[in-house]
Length: 360
Image 1 (cartoon, helix red, strand yellow):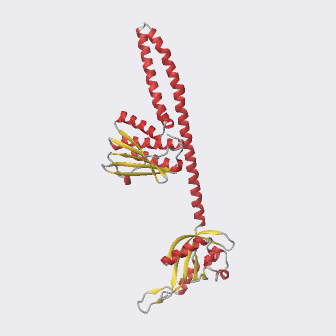
Image 2 (cartoon, rainbow, N blue to C red):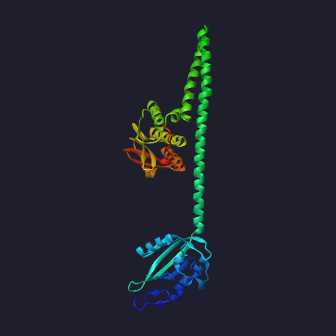
Image 3 (cartoon, helix red, strand yellow):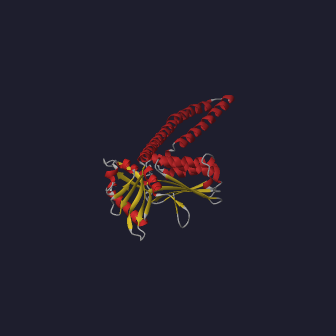
């Protein structure tokens, strides 16, 4: 170590700097202004596959794998005087490409003249490969989830049609056969018993119809999502007193069948959340286009809540979390805005390429 004659502080020696330079696990390059490499540590030699003698004098720009990336990098460093963790693909001696992070600064003389550049190169190819694999797995999971959602919806529809066509018809036939027997019977006890059976059949018919609509409302496929939401809103008004208004902007196309079912179930979940938690009198559902996205907004005049403090594992939070995950796996997005005592607005957004050309 040497001592400063003016301040008495100790400064690292040139040998100490040289030791850091050589022992660094990251590649370090120093180049002239024109680009020729004048210094490189052993890590740089190992990274690019050149001997120490070979790498000196190489134009550092030739290490860039793609000219367009090199031009953007040059523009960035000349504008700022440095770059930190700049992503760039670099080329090895044998032509292989490496994903690297560059932290580079301009070397200047005391008068401000640019002498060249110095930089640290970190190879992140393994990390990038893992990130790409993770992204691929996520895309596969989204695809699988979407397929499972489609399969679930088709199975719901199949069961609903079975309930309507088989169980419903059987109940109707039983009712038709019992009614004449009841009318022709003179035994008071038997008449009373048959009245009870007929009442039970009536209730079963109501229950089957209700279950059929819960599983897969026919109006969704026969007429469209707006009509299905209106039908569900009428159920909520009758059962819970919540007034539901449905608006649809001109030019909004009906979405494909699978996405239509997904959006309806999401809106259904949001409206049920309003009934359970919002203490609202009205809710408005609006279908509209926003650029390339088809959106559905669900807004209520209820008590609102603190979105930042939302617990996604209980109550309303779980319902919102469920909607978010369903949309995410289908390539859509979900937004929530809420203010205490002023209500909540939830927005569903899906790419408009899912819009179909058939009416609804």
